[in-house]
Amino acid sequence: MQFLKSDRRLLGVLLVLAITQLVGWGTIGLPAIVGRDIAADLGMSLPAVFAGTSVLYVTMGLSAPWLAKAFARHGARTVMMVGTVVTAPGFVLLFFAREPVLYFAAWVVFGLAGSATLSTGAYIMLNEVAGRQARSAIGALMLVTGLSSSIFWPTTSFLSGHLGWRGTCLVYAAMMLLVSLPLYAFVAPRRRAGQGDAAEPARPSPPPAIPRSTFGLVVAAITLNAFVTFGLSAVFVELLRTEGLTPAQAIAFGSMLGVIQVSARGLDFLGGGRWDGITTGLVASMALPVAMLLMMLSEGATWAVAVFILLYGAGSGAMAVARATIPLVFYDQAEFAKAMSMIALPLNLASALSPPLLAGLLTRFGGRGALGLTFVCSCAAVLILVLLARRRPQAAAVAGT
Image (cartoon, rainbow, N blue to C red; front, top):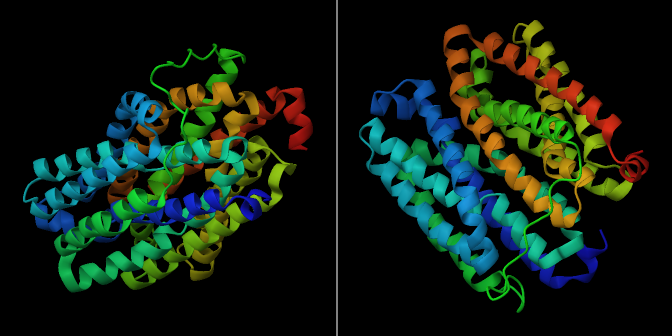
């Protein structure tokens, strides 16, 4: 935590990224609140509406390798500025959508922009500024970005109630150009001279030093958890409604989720270097199947919903940090970027598949169908993390305990 006291430049970057990541993730999460309105207006099923999120993640995954060269050549600030400008037309397309084709085209635009502006771009910018302190900086950023649903779910509900979901899209387009873009352009620091010099192409990273089977377990653990958490985040309000809550109650309870997630990330951040990503992941992942089992057996009791949100929020919040830091257990700084780029595609594909699949299960079988599948995936992730804990390098094992 010493970097927070000593580096004003890093604090400025964290402030910029905190605001822009909140806006970025919060605004594209609008189907969680207005999904039924969009479905009725465009004549689509609810799972088809949530498939827009799938298009987002697939596009982000496919765009990541291409954008890697742009990040290296021009730096994160420039790429994120371009991505922010691209996001605004996506909301305009969504505003004009009268049929599914234009609706999904908007999500392709969001995916192209998101690969430049969401999460990965933020981590790259922090790495440019913080260097070895990037892990702590990422943890600090996650303390804030976890509040995106708590802030933007009620915001989207309020705006759509007064302006409709189409008017909300125009407000969010304006927010990109009037809030996020100026922050990148005038507040975020330029990359220091000598970084990413095009005259000196980077040497290819050495091949992974760990066995392929271990890398496969890392990918499986991260992907399974992303399937659960990204999918449930997209359909969370709808899940609570299937459990008997009114729309207002579902939004109120769901808005608590972000606060709980941030609290869990805060505990991990305060832990500093006392435990590694695997230890965080093991503790966090154990809470998820317990939460889902409780929800399935409780018949929608209010107390059970509250406990479910507490357990799921704490587990998913800490696991978000673990997803970004588990590879650090096995890879040094030079190999980390290569490992993350290899993980990006299956991670984004899982994130793309889960929202429409869980929405379909909700529609056909109710909450038990979605919770049952996520329970199985969560249990599998716990077992894989146990195996990874046995394979961690000796130095990491000492740090993790």
